[in-house]
Image 1 (tube, one colour):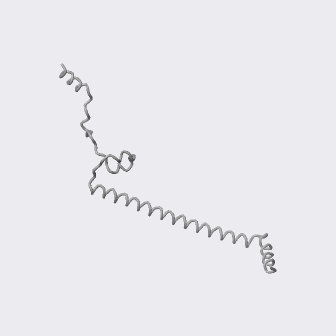
Image 2: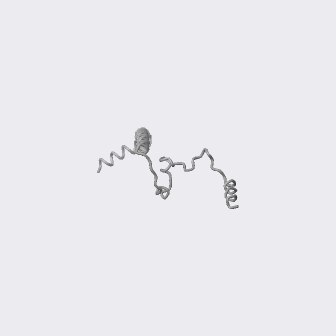
Image 3: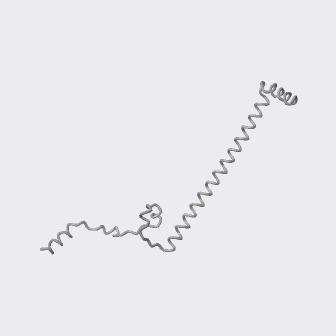
Length: 114
């Protein structure tokens, strides 16, 4: 009778999916995003896997650094260009504005009097 119960229980239990391996190994790239506690579980990866991940991470880092440097240079150049344009406009307005000319000449007189 007990052997019959064992067979019945085995027949009722869901069967594992043959396409999914029973224990799928976690890829090294996926471990980067795992919680710290899960990383304490032992894992074995080949030297080649670790080396390829490291080189890919270094390559991505270098690309980001280069992109940010180029972006920073473009921003600096735009800032310099804008400052030059603002100075040019300020000088043009100050030297040609009708109210500015007498004030500037009076300023020169006042400075000379000091």
